[in-house]
Image 1 (cartoon, rainbow, N blue to C red):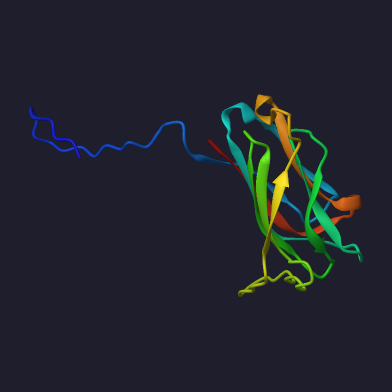
Image 2: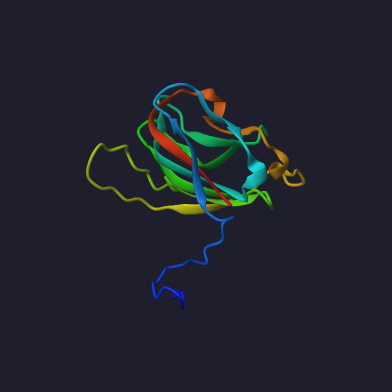
Length: 168
């Protein structure tokens, strides 16, 4: 609180740095198609990315891993395999300065997974995976780039959404 002596009024001020913050970069609705991409992203102003994976599933009879692609680099398969009766749920936090991240996800290997639901609550065991991605490449040099997600071997999405955020 500051109080100018001349007027006697009070003003609330903040020391929040102007450079910080989180920005919603886009939504990938994963109810169809084999790949989803958000384009036109400027990584030169970001330090990291957050992918929020919500009930993402596929229609193939075989278990598949989600693959994440950053800045046009080949997608990297992450997490446990997800069968057609399960939905992937998780958060992938990625640091663009070090090209490292953590993907905390379910279904955990051997845990059975969560079937997608339309109301109510569900829980499952979650595990974390350390991620080293395209080490040695400056991903922050990309001023017009993209992020993408697909299932390993290109099977079709049939449920869920992935929200993508950038942080400074």
